[in-house]
Length: 276
Image (cartoon, rainbow, N blue to C red; front, side, top):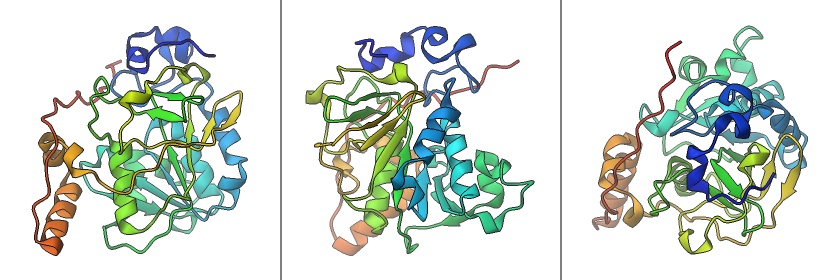
């Protein structure tokens, strides 16, 4: 389903029409988050059948609700799961493996609470190779050199969490240009007008898009980021993410040079679940 809307307008669209009945599954509301959607488990199944997923030993999956089934498929398939702490506020990444869990705990381990409970936190010095990256998207354009919209504030160019996570993994040597990037979205999240002129050096392109109805190989031509672009990182976001401050201090010590800051940023509110 291609509706021609600009990605920033997705948050203003009718979620009942776009993401499923009653505005999509929990968590709700869908604003200020990667939205959950009806059919997320089918999109995950399609992703799980990819050769890129089947041969992967370690898969990095974002912590959002629509990718929960992917985290479960990763663990139940005997693969190593790498997942970030939500919004990177309480830590960095955690590693989970099937052998660390029991049949009664594997489902809980796919939640943010379970990751904190059962996962092994890692730091910037961890020696790890990630074979596949799964990210969530607010919108994705399969025809426009496969740009993925992570919900930045009106496209002003400041780095979102997916870009920051990607940049830190590049710094660690855990990934490179050849590491496939996949997103799973609802068909209504496919758009055809993410403006190329607003795509910046830190934007993370996707190689494969999985929806409940199709798998799209994008043949991406947008270069993948090489690391953290400090001149695009706002003081506000740096202030809320300890691991970024640690990395910045480390690089400044190693190089003997001060790293730049990006523009001031008004951070969007953290998504809140409706009280029921």
